Image (cartoon, rainbow, N blue to C red; front, side, top):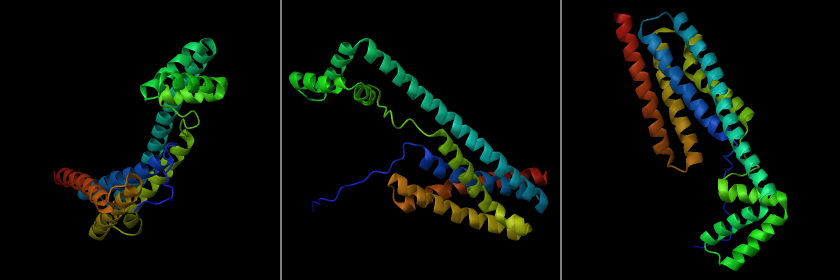
Length: 232
């Protein structure tokens, strides 16, 4: 049934949403695996606790630094391409106008209309740059990424995800803490997968099941390796 209600898109271009989801996912998976790997080697509760805290701090810093560097590099690359395009517009405006007209023609406009539209776009230097950036480069000059936001989201969300499996070891130890870590890790994986489906549009159960499978496999492998090394 047709409707007049407009549809809305989520703005995920700045990197914050992506960094938040992947940050909490990485924190949860990596610290569940680390804690269970150390616990599987029959280490003391203090050793497991220390490993979990170290994994939380080191992982949060690493994620934030990596996200900042990658987003900054992407932003600088986009800005360089925009600078090159701005120089071309100043140096050879007629050539750039013809390039834009050719793009419009390739998209179905007749030659006269393409020439008229490209001419109108070229009258305003800022509009001309924005148009060429979108049509030629696929870049929105107003959306080149926010590295600091992405780094902050990565740090906080990784720490949050890594804290969940660490919690039982802050108040106890032994088999009870191992079981609690497994349960909290599973619940966290389902929650993260469900949250991810909000951004991707996938069914929540599909995303939750995938996240649970990945987390479970990582935890089982590291626990098994820890148990084998500890026994040895």
